[in-house]
Length: 115
Length: 115
Image (cartoon, rainbow over all chains, first blue to last red; front, top):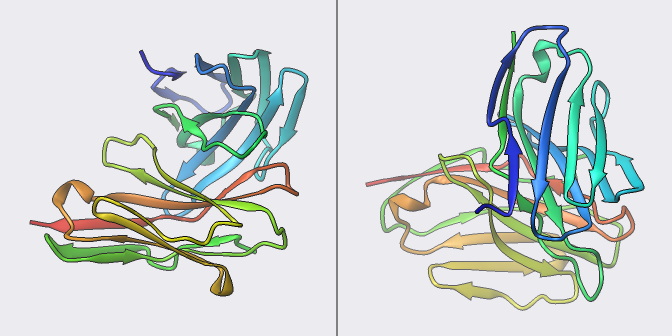
């Protein structure tokens, strides 16, 4: 089974709808991240969480909110979706900083289309 | 300002040719980490390598090699004897300790290996 899972994998929705993307991980990592990927722009950080009580805004947090329900779960919400939020969304996890920084492990991505 | 610059948007090579993907980064931190990820057409993100700022030793892994030069703030990736399976988008990323180990990704280089 995959270590980082995302649901749904694909979603088409309409402008103004509320959407929730979910991420679960079995790696036991404290740190979780949400990114969006747009053609030509690479991955941009939306929100990140270093533990259940620590949530931080990333580069492009406007229009998004997150919830860290447990160490293993990190959800991303679009309260009122708009077409320019059409993108590929990735969840990622990493281990806590100790003797070094581990790489981030990515989920398979959620392709969201807002009509 | 872009912290990670991948100036090559798209590269095409003929199979068996060598190809180098450039990555230039910008940071004020003395402790930082550099990464390369591969995104094949299937969309997942695959970790390739991690390098910390104190380790300038170049690394070779099979047909892959990485050249880290702090003097020019570059972390270039070379594929030797390219194969069709190397066709993917490759991302370089930077993580800085003073910004809480956020990841900053470049915009990616799309590599096409022509048979």
